Image (cartoon, one colour):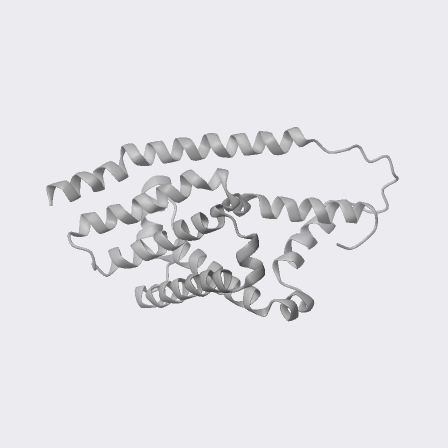
Length: 220
């Protein structure tokens, strides 16, 4: 028990500081990288504004168009299922909200634990289905790189260890909770350096595309 408690305290203390520092530095580096790319001066006369078309594209690109769904129904459906499940569990699980309240002093309503439990199971099933589809689909298997599997493993580990800790399926409990915290910290460390960066960049990229088309008077 002492070893498990020391592990838990390490994940909540020094390791958390390390993960937060790497995440902050990595995201700042990514931000500077994007800013250094610059934006070419557009000398053409603007036919419309940029802000509203950009915002419209953010919302329209979030919902898959019928053509995309017909071409890849599995990707759209399973992707939506596990992404939504992950986000809801992250934001509406009581311990997560209590953690935010303890650090920042703000909180919001949560979902009952049985609902979170169900969503966690659905999310895990969706992640497994997505991995199997990647492994069995000849094109996806060929274009996949090690980073794709690393991102999947880290995401799956966060959800699975959270489920194990909540149900106390690993003994002792401090070890289970420490595993969950450590997996979240590893995800945080890898986020700026992998495709997980899209968590922060997707909205800006969609707005930029919509704004560029909007300036030309074309709907993106």
